[in-house]
Image (cartoon, rainbow, N blue to C red; front, side, top):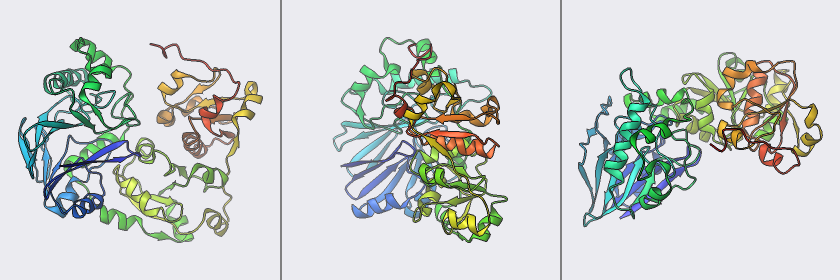
Length: 464
């Protein structure tokens, strides 16, 4: 028996490859299918099943394309009802893969169709559970993504309480847990950075699995402090349920080289997305471009900040990174990339007689010298801000920047920081496009600020 976790840091997502004999299965594949097909070929196996734990909201799964290419059956749990050929597993139904088996365990709560898959060896002994977004390491799935007119997040949380206690916590402590996500995912609140654990460890450390916890306590704690889901979540779930364009056609369309004149012409309608690193963007960028660098959690910020999933996008990429950028856009359903700049930013700006943008940066040490005269904006997430922040900093979480930037004055100079220097440049690119002019980036972000003698303060709710 072979089990391999295929973890993608950009999405904090785990897909899984299972093999016994010459048969294999994939759990929760990403959009691009070639890695799974290549892995099966390398191991002399045929992909028999594609198991989906639920309709994913934070990425577009590769189940449809993978099934077309391999002939594998797509398996969903009860209540799924997708718009394509599939098998709806009954609660407890067993699927054979070579000498081993996988049992579907219906665990509604994160969503109504959420299903975990219990892996058994050739003798029927429980080995591992692929827990999807039902159970993470350190947390459980958020219960607010499948709300309907007759169903609240509290209703779903109550379902999740019983799914965990009646279906999962009764299993062996030594059972390996393979979760759908790790730290950084928006599908939970406080996920561990570890990506593999055991059920026994989680019973001891996961707040949601406390043995003495009542249903009411569980519902309150699981629903407390959930941030609004990114707008693209519902759109991705719809694509996963009803289908999407094949990845190869999306890639072919996006890999169109655009001459300087073609790029300039398309920029009147399309979004200019600059995916270089933040230092290159700060040195010189195209006016009205949005920066989201490939070197960070690219897909998550694309989904959070580009509201229209069908928006035409033209790319400015590091040389040789064009295909990667298109692939990572497609992972979250942004399939309308129509080309990329064929040449450097500097050459393009000169050819069109355009003055480029530069972003001023200062060190954390310099900030400490001018601290009293500075208007500081902290764009980290609420939990980060609550943990520790500069007392005079104005909090404007990047997730909410479009709805909250009216709290800032376009005539005031602002010094902006995040945790390490990536998100602050994203925020500055957005503010520049909105007409702000006097913006300074703190190099190294809060990590560098903590090494200075600047005062730090906790929010009143930080210790609650």
